[in-house]
Length: 398
View 1 (cartoon, rainbow, N blue to C red):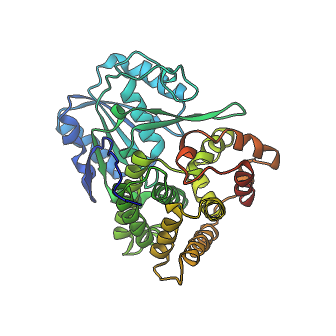
View 2: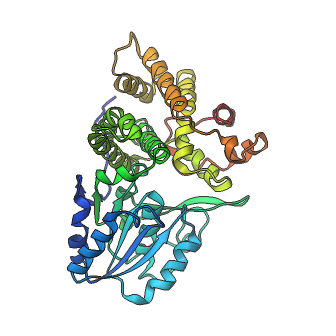
View 3: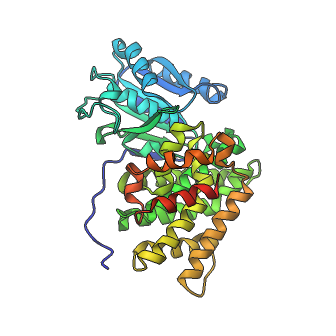
């Protein structure tokens, strides 16, 4: 098989990476105009000295700002409400400073401030199906966690929880941030459980994009580099406090950035396919879904590939991932694949990640989750899994 088959690279933001790069934000925003809409989380960043330093920088650049907060996974109602309140203020640029939920909300808001439309006009699967035409307000993304890679993607994930809930994307190339400022030092303020959940989200995105049906040499190189950085940085970042934490935060932030780029280019897999209905029907944080399912999903994928598609290149890639992450050689590819599953299972236990039942899911919910997981990310899983295989996957972590 020729690895250099045809592929394309979708639009990416200008990326500014490095500790201390947050201080560049006021100058970046000033290039777009004087009226700024700041979108942040409700507490952590505002409680830090960096918040006051940012506001002083905005003032020194002659910028005026309005401020909105996001304290949960964003809903279409939240986005439409903010857009309605802010549309009359001639916003020149939107800055999202926060985790994936904040960035997704800010991205959607920036996309709609000038259109006069509702996000439900454009939301995949549940909206009116009206094509998004723009124009959007320029958007600058500053992640304060390492997980979703939203700073590099074209989609804003919005959800509505409940029995008839959904988790869908507002997606268009025009929504990509103009600039992404990735400052690894911001991770130092993240609590340990957030580092765990978000880090496992980033890792899952790297592994799933690596074995995606749409993977390319470009995404393979980034995914492999990101997994290596994750391997070398995650556990020190999770432990925190030590002298090694600074370089570890840099490695983890880089891994997250790579995961955002690769998912935007080639899609994901079964974990993220299941994450959509799980996050819609139950109050399960997205990173927890990824962390708690990735070992089981990898095991089910490998078993299905061995049984039905033994020549699928994803099997070789799973073996490569096993060698890379375990930093050791194996006698054959099957042993390396098994070593990968064993390692991911050990990670799940070490992090003491919750089970699905801890969020109210029961055996009677399994069929409903499987019935609603077939869109989006499931389309780029390395092979189509049967309902029985998906049920087995979920049952392992129920």
